[in-house]
Length: 237
Ligand code: VGL
Ligand code: ZN
Image (cartoon, rainbow, N blue to C red):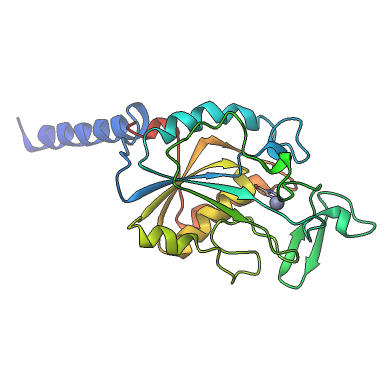
């Protein structure tokens, strides 16, 4: 065999290896003690029929349950607003849901009333079956500040404490699933990167709202922040 033939075989082998790992067999990511799954806002208000329904949000519930079985560490989040919260269109006379206004901390999309503390709409969907979840963290409870992120409120400054909890438990990597891809999932994953975690978003275990191009914009800013976009088939679970 001459050196060109050998080189050709070698390159073919490398190419096949890439194809096997990347496309056919998945990435084979195996969650361990330093990994946590964050299940974002799978709450009644975001389900079909809810006040801020995310299209097909119910489809991800069985998949999330299955994924969660592969994780030792699972955190659930709940959007948890005061009545009359600043993110509600109803709190701003003349404004309608999905319009944007400028607040002290920046632009705020206005939403239908949703996930009011203690209401049935704020409860986690009954189909979620993750008894080994270790923490439920609530966010968005300050009347004048929204919090899409489970880590840092919309003022870009106030912490929820989730980073301290995860770091205190030795977690280095978070996998994010839930609702909605372009808001609470995206902001949670992006802030995870800011706080020095590795972050994956499992795309098929999320659904988006997609208002004014928000879904494409969210994937772009997640990529820029170093969030890795994967599919559930990339997990070895
Ligand atoms: C969310 C809009 C308003 C979310 C929460 O969970 O993505 N979106 N509040
Ligand atoms: Zn909210």
